[in-house]
Length: 252
Image (cartoon, rainbow, N blue to C red):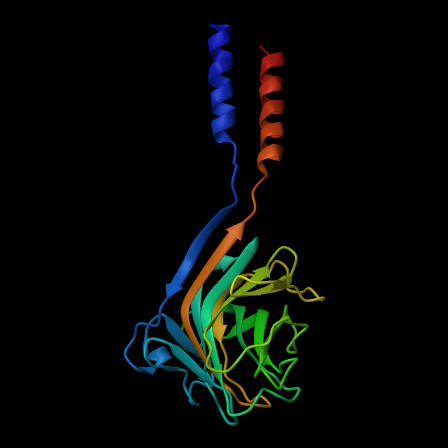
């Protein structure tokens, strides 16, 4: 009987151990709405500039237009997340009449706290993404900048892009470290030098319109929001389980 009790205990310990990194898709948004205002659809609510120029939907994509005057900002809400990494993946197209220039780039997407109801404020902006001037303005039109909590980009992606091209963007914000990172078309990842906002209660993803130096238009489609929370590595979990198993063996 003692031999059998050891066998059952081994099975219990080994099958109870976490061996993977958990992750979950929170939102899948393909903007499959009738052409019109984005916030006419229940998933999206305006939290700023609701009486100004709205974010529009056309051909199953959302379009933001930077420019002067009052302009709408909108959010899509999800359950509170304050640890691990929150991610937004979407396709992005930028258009303008001349390569992006100037120093006032203005972020157009970020995570935040609040939202989820018409007029409900969104605060604690983290993981900000903006369109910035390209390194090579002769052959390219723009690049992308990121920051963790500041209004100005703390890091610029190492590749330039062309107006009208559709690219796939992955914006990550690590709530444990406060670091933002950006990946484009499964390429190189850039992390800003400064961290901030660790442990923020993130509950919304926001699209933002404002008045930038270039006032470009930005089209977003195929948005997926997901989170991931690290659990013990297999080797760590296994050592812990074996220690527990040894304790039971000594006490038999």
